Image (cartoon, rainbow, N blue to C red; front, side):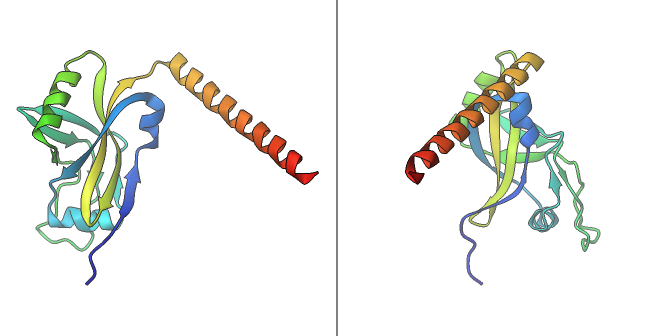
Length: 160
């Protein structure tokens, strides 16, 4: 059987990019049991209420819902158990220092398979206030309008 190549996204947390200002991102491996991997390959996961914590020098992912594997037996996993994340020691030390600052959280942005291994894109983020969200939306809309206008100007120039 050929080895998997590339990146296959399982689930992404689009709401996190809206609710938080992303300061830094990390790629972390996941410690999973067999039925969790099978369920992830079927695309049955949710990052809606997920967050990460640093406890005793280890990073844990909490609140992730990986649905029980439908063909699992008594060896099936618990849907919302905490899962250990695999990071380098230096990265964990940075995260410990940063999360002690006020207002910074660890939020999972996406879950994916990279070369056959389950990974999580973890973000160091600061929560946005309501007015910050409005400003971000207005800025994005203005950039989109400028891109449209530039596109129309370029097309108009080449049509002559």
